[in-house]
Length: 387
Ligand code: CAA
Image (tube, rainbow, N blue to C red; front, side, top):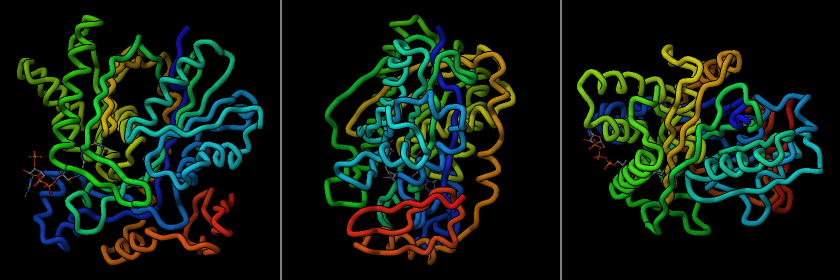
């Protein structure tokens, strides 16, 4: 029986910042951000969106009425949760109107959370093939104004429906994984901004890739050309460029050129959204699927998931027959309709999201998302559905 991703939805806010303009304000050469970091635009998440609304808005792209009775597992992977106890999944299942005979919970392991959820959902469907699981990766990446990490911020959510006989991608065998207790990136309780050992984190990411990819090759006898293309966790897209260069380093020149060219499709969306932590790998996958003209049925895609702290995993998925019918172009439209804001406006939004006051009421008139955060009522977050 095939198990995999039946459908995939994405959401980010309608606001973005131009990276060249941010670079100028920070007295950096724009090409450092555009080429050196590999980011052109950055999603800016207003106060009326948090990981619950981002996740619900992404899920609402794929959760149709006929699925209401079939989904009985909702897993949210996040590292920017807004409650130390209650899971974002509990809110999201309710906002979507899912049934109550359901399991809802949240997973944390930095940017790896959504992959952990996806793999758990795969195992669950293996023994409950008549059920469906909703796996969401939702995050707002924050390092602080004027920090080195600032150009690698962003935010958004990816939602995936996991089922038997999927319409998009089927898991192809098992994963290889590697974990070590590493201090490359962390966010202590009470902090809204991440702490990071930047250069070190970029090296750990590649070191873990080398472990899981070598293990994958040894275990499954796989070679590079078995994969039509790859999708990587993209904290910023230059990191993915380093990852693909690592994988192709021993290949002939024309093979290297071909994979470098294919990589461009997998970073197109991430370049204009920024980091969404848990969702980044799956936005890269969506970017590849919607922008590559070379993919066909039965092609194998290699996926590398990395979560600081640290966890790495490599696995493969195969495109199923008729996969093109699932790709609706909604993401392209969503990203094309966003509004640019100035560096000053971005800084204002940034400062406003550092603290949420009890009994604060938000102006939702400028936020046209389906789900928005309307107020904080005695520390309780109150969400509304606008349409
Ligand atoms: N034109 C073209 N390229 C230029 C340039 C110019 N004018 N000026 C600089 N560059 C290049 C540099 O040569 C460098 O390239 P390489 O990485 O290939 O060496 C690149 O731009 C970045 O320049 P710096 O190294 O000087 O950048 P920095 O010191 O300002 O920091 C960073 C970069 C470490 C990524 C920092 O942004 C950061 O800490 N980001 C957050 C951490 C992060 O994303 N880590 C990734 C791995 S961890 C992970 O994956 C989990 C997660 O999601 C966080």
